[in-house]
Amino acid sequence: MSQQIKEDLSQFIRELRSAKGSARIDLLGRFGLLIPALASSAVIVLILTFLWYESALIFASPEGGMGIIVNPTWNPNRDLYGIAIFIAGSFMCTILAIGIAVPLGMAGALFLSEFCPHRLRGPIRMVIEMMAAIPSIVYGLWAYLVVTPWIGSVLAPAFGVESNGLSLLAGGIILAIMLLPTIVTVSDDALQSVPRTLREASLALGATSTETARKVVMGAAMPGIGAAVVLSLGRAVGETMAVLMVTGNALQIPFSLFDPTYVMTSIITNQLGYAFVFPLWRSALFAVALVLLLMSISFTIMAKLFIRWGMKTRGLR
Image (tube, rainbow, N blue to C red):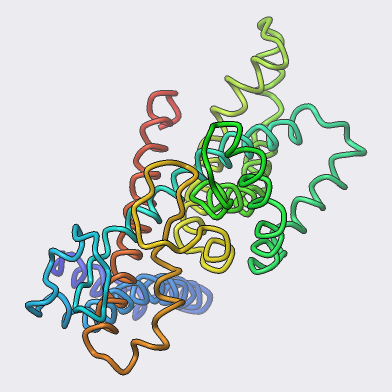
């Protein structure tokens, strides 16, 4: 790899020396565009390095070690720093939110793109885009006053469960609502970019409008829809305030949708201020942040691989 980089750099220098006028300006412009691309990658590497440096203390100490990832007991007063409960809470909350938001968001985008009357499309999309601008704390307040009482007084009794509403389900619902604008708008743009000729060809072959939208248009727009899913995954894993307010923040692994949970972002927000002067406690919280970032990267990679596989099976790649 390093040899290839040296060869490319040498070729660039030779071209720069031989180029004249506008050709040299074009080469310099291409090199200038390369810098922000490399800087974006360097930022991720620097963040990972910083988090590893800060969390190295807990991973190297006898009270911690790599076992904290699977240890479910978190009690800094007794030097117990198991973060498995936070990993489980974040994972379950994210999967639940994605499971709710992606089907609803794709259905909404498909309606806007293919079936919505033209005069209604603009106002509906404007409202959806405005949802993305609402601060997460506002979503959290609304969920705390509306969603959690509904879960505690209506939904939980319907399933024969006692709950105060602060639960994994509340976190998943509010996260799904927050993800909908991203999924709908990005997917709608992808669907709108599909050439009209594909729709006309499908209809000419006898397919219905629904079949055309579901099998032809959505298949062609798969890369854009995949981008929407990847963006929503990143926000779902990293969301803090709204989830903190409605999940109950209980130090336990939830075994049902109505159990309270504690996500990784919430424990960092709640305890970093107190833990900053205690090296081991602080390092454990940075270890939570490191695992959170690695989880986000892993989700993104898996989503991209799944999308690539879907495109390949549809003959798009």
